[in-house]
Image (cartoon, rainbow, N blue to C red):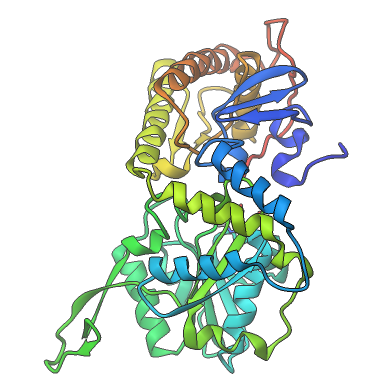
Length: 414
Ligand SMILES: Cc1ncc(COP(=O)(O)O)c(C=O)c1O
């Protein structure tokens, strides 16, 4: 077991070097070697590219003025105002530093608003909720949701989007059941937020209701499309471009019950995260979010092209901004047990040999350019070719000498 890194940065899993010494835009320096990051881009945090000059400048200025005191920093107020501008319902915002803890805060606040004791969830919402072992249902699967729904459920936690777009029926069902049974809807935008638009992905979701612009229809069964308005929305990762920060934004009447339980931590009020977030949002507001879609789609196309060229079966997800793929078993080639991890090990290693950090996940950022994708495509070509050439050999004996790390270990990149 190596000494550094939690799950997703553990070099035993992702095959990368244990340490980096410098990062800038889409490059990371490890052991004196410069790598192009065409992988998880700081686990989906760094849409403006690593080490952004303007965010750094704002942070340095805050450091010089002092980043912690007995009082809250002024920027919290500015950020709360900004959140009110972004969300078209009356909201209150609370600040924390990591995604997992902010989901725990959101869950606690949600539970404060209901007498029902149970919460259910779909997807991943951080290590704290994972260890609570809430009952889970499958995304886009109404039947599996029905199985875990009962009269004691007071909160639904929804990891808003990851592999596929939400279906209309799924979201309508959630909306209707929350309304009918007074269930609090907590939407996790920690990974999705600010990758599709300036704000949460939930803004793309419309459901039908008999309410039009706040007025209730008098005609029986008359329905209007309304934008989904979750009770609580949680943001993290991309909102502060690599500085630790997260936000819990909720409807005013829901958030006002936050103090019914004890929720507190000293460093939730440090200034660096807040300032970094304010500056990051200011810069993100000027961006065209279609760019992230286009870059992600281009990478998905590269995977597809290579898979066809070398007849290596893969499955690619639906969402370019959160692009990922999985190697699939192919019965024609012997033992296919654990094949995704085995092929992924080769894939990661070949990319490393070409000075590229990559894996089965690609998070696009505004600093990825066509030249980077060309470099990436060349490396992918070599990687898929290598997989194709090696799949008849029972052990993945790799023939080129100068690769840095060749292990037949399970590779897991979240
Ligand atoms: C949707 C989602 N929620 C929560 C988390 C947890 O965030 P953090 O790792 O900052 O605790 C993640 C992290 O990958 C995530 O993808």
